[in-house]
Amino acid sequence: MTKVIPADRIKKLPPYLFAAIDAMKQEAIREGKDVINLGIGDPDLPTPTSIIERLQRAAAIPKNHQYPSYEGMPSFREAVAQWYQGRFNVALDPYTEVVTLIGSKEGIGHAPLAFINPGDTALMTDPGYPVYHAGTLFAGGESYFVPLLEENGFLPDLHSIPESVARKARMFFINSPNNPTTAVATREFFESVVAFANRYNILICHDAAYSEIYYNDIRPLSFLEVPGAKEVGIEFHSLSKTFNMTGWRIGFAVGNKEALAALLKVKSNLDSGVFQAIQEAGITALKTEDHILNNIRRIYQERRDVLVPGLQKLGFQIESPKASFYVWIKIPSHTLSAEFASRLLAETSIVATPGIGFGEAGEGFIRMTLTSPTTRLLEAVDRMEKAGITGR
Ligand SMILES: *Cc1c(COP(=O)(O)O)cnc(C)c1O
Image (cartoon, rainbow, N blue to C red; front, side):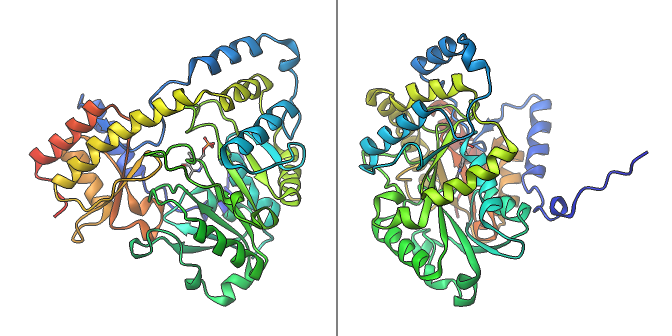
């Protein structure tokens, strides 16, 4: 009998900090409690009908049953380039500057395999999406975490990165609109990132998964809108959050063609692309009429405008997010985020994510999501009030 010994890289993964909360949640559900789940970043709204209908038609076409091309269908990549031109006024060559991904997580996770040699450093923001670090570990790299601090508007302070670290760094993961802090990058910030990348010869990997979840018609920028960005970086996009398609698994990377070619080299050895019927549906998604997306944004905005004032009334210091479907909530300084989340679940059956789960700099915060109806958010605030859980 073989004694199965997992590789060291698996042991190096950080402990799954949500495990305790998950177990408590399952327990509460088993006990028949009415759990309000504000923990998951997964849209509750359905995929728009036109996209579903396109999949149904495309699934019946025999040529779509065969292997897709590694880089994605030309028609999907052309639709991406068109969408980019319309949305960001950025011109992309669909054949060299767009790669289809099996969701952006797949591209983000594989990117370090294309750019990191064992021992190389990847920069990433903390708190952050855990895949930046996991992908770096799998490539044998070292992660350097740049904290996202309230006093800097939750944007990374590039000057805080030691010269010796910057010189060793090969890539830098940034993310705007940000999960979990909800911060949105300014043009000046992106310009400073381009200068930083040029100075230290670093590849920028910008995660733009939430670019279309914004409020008050203030549209977040693409990193590629800034002069020189395409010379230093790539941008990851997802259809998941924008079109309520998390289960479909389709996204794309755009930008620097040498970088995309290297990423594609990794991918073509590990996966075989995205089911063509889903790519066809993706074309329909990228052509979704504005009124449909405006309606989705309006629903999140209504929820935001219920949850944020409700929490503020309970004494929590929070700013209303300008983008994303998260609320990043500062908790009283005398508690740890994991303790706070446990108490919330035990006393109110509300699931929220402790900030520490996104990295050390996430301590002192919890994250709630706007992927539940307003009635549930009102109920959540009400339960907190009754349990005496406040921001003070
Ligand atoms: C959800 C999410 C992704 C990944 O989405 P996919 O479904 O894999 O496209 C990437 N980055 C961030 C920050 C996310 O929250």
